[in-house]
Image (tube, rainbow, N blue to C red; front, side, top):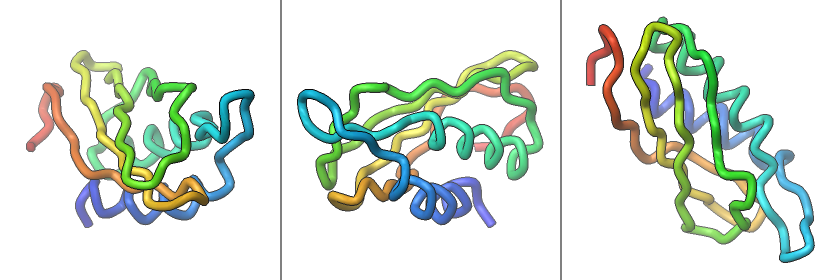
Length: 105
């Protein structure tokens, strides 16, 4: 199963419960998304991740996209693009780019 397909399934399930209301509207709670991306990337790509950073101010707007940065312990950075599916903050991965040591595109 591809990284994109695994990420889509897992993130779709977790993101629904990973949003919080803020002063300017509802924003996605990134902590669970970052944890899920890290675990999924390490499992599927078999590369250790040092950190994952997603924007903390992403409003829940269906069809909006945002990027999360994945820094690898062995060097290299990857960027995953996610799309918000609905007003429940379900998200799925729509792209992966960047350079990583030993990884295949």
